[in-house]
Image 1 (tube, one colour):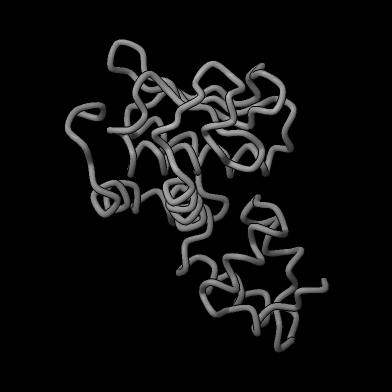
Image 2 (spheres, rainbow, N blue to C red; image 1 turned 135 degrees about the vertical axis):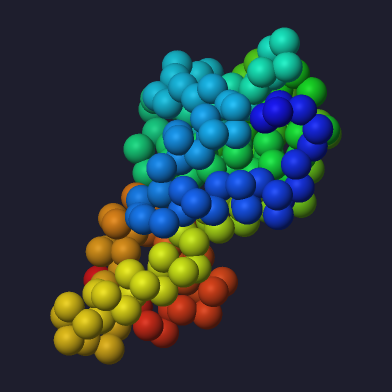
Length: 185
């Protein structure tokens, strides 16, 4: 029952783990496996990167057509984080602006229930599913071996995982893997 009782982050993560086996992770498939509808490249109001809305008990995530595809992927993962972690706070929906803030008073779903701490939690969840530790470590090892180098190129990593360079840099830093990557490449 995808839209039924609240699933914890651990439950959602365990449920989607079988889909986190290859980069880039299939985010739309993940969302649909949780019972969510997805609209990539939606015509959202200016300044809105993404939204999650609930109508008749069904959730739908939309990402802005004005955003780069890698940014859209992060936004989709971020909104999945809200679904997994903050469903009781979503109400009819919430919009996230370009800084991933829900109380921007723009868009259809300004939501003052979602605080900065919730946005940070959704970002952390997004990073965890977009760049799973095991896949990232394996890709770093593969690149180092292929190149015969002590470091993997950042460019190759963010393109493989289809995330922005800054998202990859943050994830590497948070996992303590930065020293294994050439951050200038």
